[in-house]
Length: 140
Image (cartoon, rainbow, N blue to C red; front, side):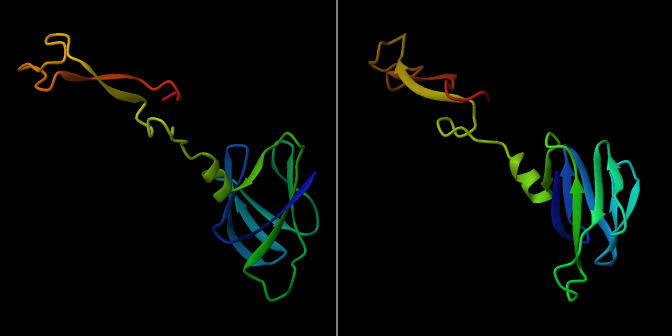
C-alpha cells in the first residue's frame, strides 16, 4: 500500500519507531533521507529505493513547479507497518494525565484522628489527619 507525505528539509516521519528525516533537497524529484544508523538514501522519481525492511520510497510528482522546497515522498509498505509524520508520532507519545488525581497517582482525604477521635489534639490540631491512598482510576 502506498502513502504520500509532503515534507520540507529537516522535517521527519517515523516508520514504526524509526525516525527518518529529509536531510537535503536538490529538486522536487531528487532529495536525501537520513536514517538513525547514519545511512543516507538519495531518492529520485525513477525507481523504488529500499529504505527499511519491507519499506520502499520514491520521489513523487510535485503539485506545482514553484514548490521546490517541498518534496512528495511516496512510501510503499505493508499495511501492518505504522508510518506517521513526526509531529503526529510525537503527539501520540504524550503522557496521558488521569483526570481524578491529575497525574500524581494518589489521592488524599481527611479522616478522624485515631488519637483524639475528632476532638483535636497536639498531633492533629483539628481532629482530622490526611490519609493518602492510590488513585483507583489510573496506572501511575
